[in-house]
Amino acid sequence: MALEILPEDLPVISAQLSANHASLTSVIAAAAAAALPGSAGCDAVSTSIIGPAFHAYQPQFFGVTATGLAHMQTRAELLGPVSLMYAASDQTGGAEVTAQVAGLAT
Image 1 (cartoon, rainbow, N blue to C red):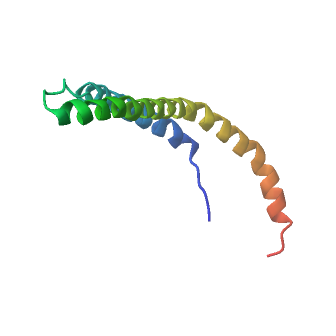
Image 2 (cartoon, rainbow, N blue to C red):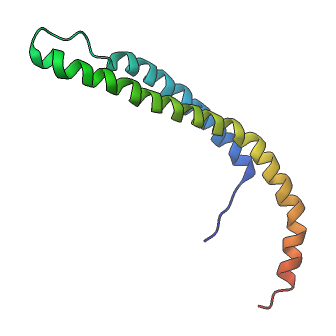
């Protein structure tokens, strides 16, 4: 299995992640407000089940979603510096890898 990393693509991926983060954040913000149930009706089912169930569910779901969005943004911000470090380490390690390959029997 081979893994090929093109360091010049990492900033592009970072920009895509940041754009996805912005659009997803706006969707989640609108959905979080809409996901809260309205006042329960006067019937027993609404007051006993629907309100408590959905009021408990909404913060849990959107809390985890907000944490995931924060991780997404953090990773997007780190890809730029990682691409520079990867390119530098790839260049400095290239001579060592070439020397090792020359000593291998084919």
